[in-house]
Structures are given as C-alpha cells and as structure tokens.
Length: 215
Length: 242
Image 1 (cartoon, each protein chain N blue to C red):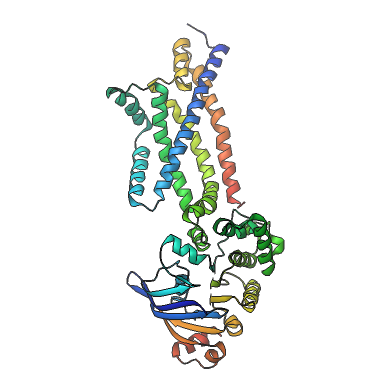
Image 2: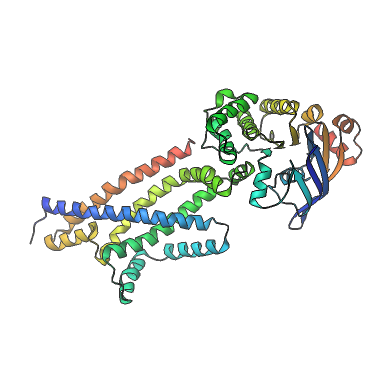
C-alpha cells in the first residue's frame, strides 16, 4: 500500500487540470448553446420560444447525473460508444446551456422596455437596437450571475467521474483506493476545489456590488 | 405645407376606446400643444404620429411618409421624426456624445468627423457642449432631458414630438428644458407637444388642442382658447390647472 505523501498530492493536482479543462469546455460550449437558447427565448416567434423553454425546463428539472447516464450509457446501448470526455462534455453542455440561457434571457428582459422604444424611435433596425443598445446593458447585468454559475460548473464536473472521466474526483477515488487515507485525500481535494472556486465567488460578488452603485 | 396629416384615426385597447375619429394637421414650423387630463388620449395620439402606437382606422401621413406598419416604412418615417420621452431614455452605457452619434452613424451612415461636428452643434443648441464625454447618470434630470432633445435633433428631423418631457422634473429644471424647447420653436421646428405646462402653451404654442375622452373638443390659437373656453370640460380643466 502507498502512503499519502507529496507525489500523491501532485497526482491530485494533475487530475485537477482535467477539472479545469472540462469546466472551460463546458463553459465555452454551454455559453455558445446558451446564447442561442437565450435568443430563442426572447424571440418573436412563438415556436422558437416554446421549444427553447421546453429545453430549459427539461435540463433544469432533471438531475445532471441522469443526463450523464443517458448520454453515456443510453447512447452506448444504441451503439454510439462515446469516449468519456465527449459524453461528459455533451451532458455538461446541455446542463450549462439551460442555466446560462435562462440567466441571459433574464438579463435581456431586465433592460427597460423604454430602451427598445428609444432605439426604435431613432430608426434603428431590430438587430442594431439589440447589438448597440440592449446587449451591452444585458451583459453588464448578466456578468455577476454568469461568473457565479461558473462555480456551479466547476463543482458539477465532479459527477463526470462516474462515467470514467479522470478528473479531480475520480483521481481522488483512485488515490483513496491506493492509500486508504480518505481523510487526507478528500481534505486535499476539498482544498483544491476551494482554491479554484473561491476567487470566482469573490469576483462574482465584487461585480455585483459594482453593478449596484451604477457605473 | 403640412408635416402631419391625420385623418379620422381611431384606436382602442381591447374594448377601451382611446382615440375616436381624430383628424389633425400640423403645418411646417408650427407648434401644436396637446392638452387634456390623464387618460384623454393625448399621449397615445402623439405616439401614433411616429408609429410607436398603431391606429386601427384612418390614415396618418408624417413628413411625407404614409404610415405603414412595416419595419422598413416605419424606419423611413422615424428618420424624419424625433421624439422625446418623459423618462429621457438615454442609453446609460454610452456617453452623451455617443448617445447622440449612434443613430446618425448607424442609420444615416454619416462619416465620423461630420458626426462629431454635428453632435457638438446640437449639444451647443441645448447648452450642454461641456457634457459631450459625460455619462447620463452624471447629469441632472434637466440636463438628461436636454441631451435627449439633442439626440433627436442630430437626426435633423422635420418634426419633433414631446411626450410630457418635463413631468419628471422639478420647477427649476422644467424651466431650462422649456427654454430649450422655446428656442427650438423659434428656429422654425415643427413641434407637437403634450404637456401640463400651461405657461408654455400660452407663450410658445401657435395652436392648442384640448382633448377629452379620446376626442378633440377644443382647438385654436392659445390666446383665444384660454380667454374664451367654449366647453365646460375645458373650463373645468383651466380652473383646476391655473
């Protein structure tokens, strides 16, 4: 049996890299899809609104763990054998895009109606109004909750250990099996998650208070 | 030449009728003041003149554009019609200068240099030349409203609409905004003004319309209308506001 020492800590930190990569991938992909979802949610077309709303409800109201299982095991039953990283990335993208789409819809809708009206009255096209008047204001409103949600993404990547992603959580399980020192292993793991998430939480809160004083 | 020709326009929200068979013309260079109690339809009428509200019957022609509710037709019309709102509605994420240059840049494709020159010219008109680089939330309400007027003027409109633009301002700030509007009127701008400022109506208006329950019930030059109101509604309105 191995004893828990410096090499084991290095191993955990290396595993944490995958947590970070997966978080960034999720944020990137989820952000892309989430933007489309947000646009569909505020669109004038009723069908687009209905479909995007159903998407958000579906992925917000089912456990991420189930989504992971369905993407990984469900698809493999149908003959699609996805590598763990693809399955994990896909499931996390569904999850993140549903939440980000909803956060951003809220931010767009929080821009006062009169701003649309003023832009309209100045003969701007709908796209020009959105791009130059609504979006910049919505982005300011959306930044604190978006950064806050990134913390949720980081923590939720731990679930992907179930489908065989060797990220921090799975790395920890492996170390635990090898060393039988759960307190040491999981204390270090906690600390690593904290070191990643805490600055983001602080940033989110800072952005929020800056928003509250106006500019 | 008429800058506004509205014929027999009607509008209702669900079952509530807001405008009943209204006809109205505004000559170029004319200042028309719309008076009436809240709910009389005056703001709705004003907003119908640039298509922010749709009419259900009748016809409207403004600055040579027939009112057609398609994006492109509305934009063509709105290029020639400025509107100023009660709540200013400046874009808070842009400086005053950027607020003013946005529409000329996007809509009229005015070159940048020319745009900056124009922005300074209209800011000078409203007495805010030194606020070019200031953000709206650094300005007083009166200054914001003057900046909003400047933003409309930068599009070189043929008609300006004012929708209770001083209702959110205290008396002193109201004064500075009304002074800008009076000088604009002096310069020959055609204006339709919804206001509760009777003094402004008396001094600046060429013609006053009193609306009641979605109808125009009195109309005429201010001196005549104010000295000899002919309907009991307008008499009561004057008695309350003076």
